[in-house]
Length: 226
Figure (tube, rainbow, N blue to C red):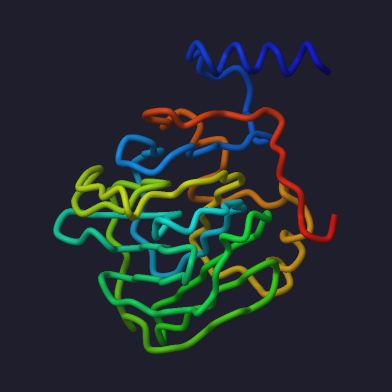
């Protein structure tokens, strides 16, 4: 087992793509600033979605950005922002959740939205913590944009501000093209390795690292109940 992890780490450090479909890893964003982030492209158009991830941070100096999706002409097409008081943006319209996750513990965070009536839910550790309707009813998420973890985009893959950067660790980021059920999200909150998105899965993100984002194998994530 130790030899296997050593081989994986060597592949990650030296950029050997395709070592194997890696999922048991975490990324650390070590300091505030504009240089540490993960970026990938290729989102399809969506009428509904769910984004889930695990995070750990004790930072109180920045308004940490976990997930930013920008398209041409709209920087905040999807934004999960400010781990001191999470804000959710859909096509530039914001909802505040009054929920935080910067207490130095691992938390499972999920956000879902659908355009039929603009209904949205924000989950923390498997529980619906905030929800509503009327958020960009009828809107279709535009395709082909830029997903960035750890920074808030003011334009495609750029316009970063250090006070909005993510400082801490993140793992198991997944994106689905539908709204997951409450039961599904509750179940996923019991394991840091549970769940695999059908739009993006966690193994997709490791190749988009920039700056000093560090890889930890295996992931040190532990649910609160563990």
